[in-house]
Amino acid sequence: MTFTSPLSHPVNPKAIAPEREALAQWLDYHRAELLTKLDGLDEEQAARRVLPSLNTLHGLVRHLTKVEHVWFVKVLAQSDEPAPFGWPDRKDGDFLLDDGETLAADVARCLAACERSRKIYAGMDLDDVRTHHRVGELDVRWVMIHMIEEYAQHNGHADVIRELIDGTTQS
Image 1 (tube, one colour):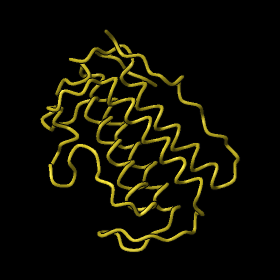
Image 2 (cartoon, one colour; image 1 turned 90 degrees about the horizontal axis):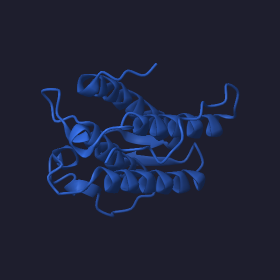
Image 3 (cartoon, rainbow, N blue to C red; image 1 turned 120 degrees about the vertical axis):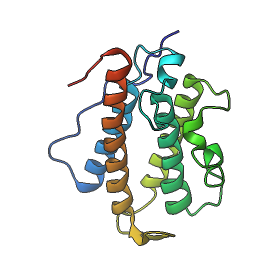
């Protein structure tokens, strides 16, 4: 069975929008873009390692699920709820793919994490300040910009991985 993204293609963010809306639109654009990299792949292809690192397309979905949880749930919502995949105790648990979860299950988990993040963001002001153990004080705006950067970086990785798997390139 091959993967089909549950989202339509990414919606381009408005060229002119208020800051809060623009940040949310760009993050949603990159979230959807990640899932397009999986279209047409089977489980084996999505889990295939084509780089010396642990990076796989399936692993990137899991990694970004964990990142959503860390920044929105732990940092912004200040919850002590455990992060997925055993983080931080289990190094690279998101990339190891050894827990038997299917790509579809992990995509569903990622989509749920994104929806939860949207709800957390909706209840906050961009100037609300939180503390991160490594960064120090930061505001919600910083988290949104960081998340856009995180997805954009990993979407670049996903482009390379996908091209190495089956030659597919996206422009």
